[in-house]
Image (cartoon, rainbow, N blue to C red; front, side):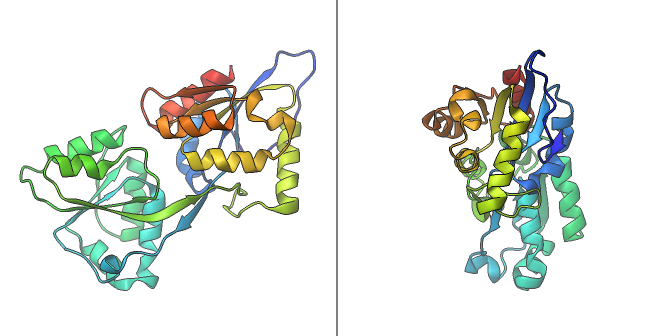
Length: 279
């Protein structure tokens, strides 16, 4: 895959090359690369969302119950909570002293252990639904409080499932995804920088079959800003793979030529579906 936009090298007499555009945030790319590198399609990373930290609520600033179990389902949430070491020391101290930290996936667990300097339990689950199920199976006593640090937008409401099974869960959004294109370092693209990036991508995908992956409605909006009025990047010429029904609605309303949802709302399925649509 390419981090950024390489120059085009297609030949007019060759069969159209398959290009997959991956729109997740620049901060997500290191974790995404393993699954993207396994795809047959030529993957171009065009980040269409930016990660923006949210201030923690006052209850978290003042610390929280030491017996609470902490859940992380993204590396972005881990990074932001770890930054509290300097900005919100009471919240960070409570986080470091929590009775248990549970994560979704090995990479998130490794990052949490590195930044929080404590052991973390990794539930190796393909979905958030599975994470909730595994967490519950290991907790025989109902009433155990959970705190879920997440993004503002979530594909699956983990807290609702935990609450339904008798486990109080307080979801704290610690970041939001801004609907705008960025460069590889997460800085928002505007004016000449945006025009240059758009021109580069247009040259790269000329004479190619294009599919695009969206993991949130925000990324759909970010892509529309990136594409602007450039005809080759117009939705009507592109097939879209989406992670769930909310994102599917956003892509359909945007006018993509074909919108297909994953069988399971997970990134590996999203990438595989996008590669399939590209061919």
